[in-house]
Image (cartoon, rainbow, N blue to C red; front, top):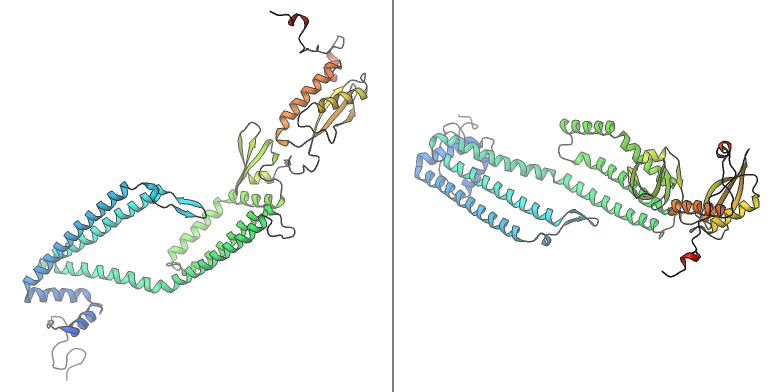
Length: 455
């Protein structure tokens, strides 16, 4: 009695035994047998035997099939090239403004020109891919024309089928993980949008939270958003394809080491920027002086703060430097009175202090942007060996014009003192001078008698 695994019931060898001949069958049995042989693990040998059977019983049929494959593939390739060229020519004529830009949060990630070039690039490469597949199909038909190349034709067909089956199987197997990732991303996006509305309410004072200042809202939302995104990345990582492979893990470790070694200064600037936000040292538009740079704060970013100086120059200062230097804010505590402008003069003991105070207050009152209320006042700052040091103080609410205010105040002081024949001196000047005390003559701007005559 023969082995049922190696023979059929009537003693004939099984269909998949070496040298067996495939009997022509029809109908559902033929479809079932072909499907069973194709997915039995020996597809190349089965297709080769099918080609040899066709070559032995109907060589003309094999040539007709091969010629049809070649002809149809070439015709389809020419048709695809014609369609793609017409499509590209039409897209070239269409203005770029008709393409919608890629927007995200009211920002154009890709402009209309970029979208036009992207679509043209996609169509161009899609045409080349279709042409390559059809050309490969035509090459398979050419290899079927000769009995010596049937083995290569069968191998190419099986390789193509295996690639499609592998890609489809991998996609079907990855669908549960893909659905999980999509659900997590949707939930996280909803959470971030909800938190964004809450922090927007805190920034606009629509939502009141005790001891939480409105200028903290943007920075706090950025920190919370970063933490949520980092946590989401950690959760999603195991569901990514290839996440468990050693190569993927090695690349992740390498990138982490590079970031940790090369971003020390960047991290310091980021942390310093966060600390400055919560210390409320200054805000956008404040007049400040930091590390010898005075001007108006025009931008605060993650890494640097930009100041527009009084000479209209933009200076970028790293946030870490701001944290390690004193910050003088001329706009922070304006209150009801404003900023106190002050300067010192030295006058000899021969001039009464009441007169000096009167002249200094008059100079301050003549200065623009120095308020009349509260009134300017004078302090006798010190009594030196050869002179008295006086300090004039006045209030202003225009800190952005401090250089002009000081310049005009000094000019008015000189005019007041020279007009009253009071000399502004210093001990060094008096020690080396051997001449009577003089003051510059007052230059009159009134027209004289000789200027009033008609010419």
